[in-house]
Image (cartoon, rainbow, N blue to C red; front, side, top):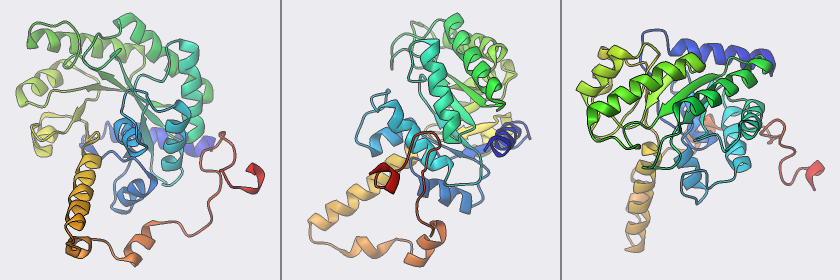
Length: 297
């Protein structure tokens, strides 16, 4: 997997530097990844909140690391395009634990990560020097493996921290972006801001490729492209949209109205074109046989 994985990592980084907005509708399972690949998307990104929710857990590293890595591996091995994974804070307090997470992540076949700097949602941010140490350590682990892992350094300056004014959040984000890039980050992901004025300021002062979360209140994709944003993520919003449709469907069924079930759906043959026909093999390199395999019984 070495040469192929290295090539995918290079390809993913190039997608952040080619002057075109990289749009990533984050997925939580292999079929979502395969739909994106079939529709021509050049890369796939996971959403930790969506994966956790799909398995019945809240976000925030409540899902076990092995469970998250297994799903990332299933997604990464289901497509030929590069896959970048949201690993929250790295499922680690120490640098040694973080190194273990990155080794498992690389074993899964992923070639990019999101790594955030908040200690808890809405709470304090990790000290800049500590987060820089973590980013540098991730880079060292990936370099030892010979894989130019694409590090998307998420900063929560706009949703956490003791800032009294919006301008202070902008200043903190810009300073963190500079230091994170120096530590080895390839892209900066400020969580939260979607207004044009803030994004223009960030773009003006951050030299590193910039990732923006697309929300209902955010500026359009066309505007993001115009101001020079490199990457647009949808986070858990695709998952929540699908879940809302499912909830409406089952609510209608509970009222004995079965028509919505057939109103909008893919035909069986359309789904079959997206799926693999061969039997499943070990989906995540390094994590052992699939439950039910002859070797695993």
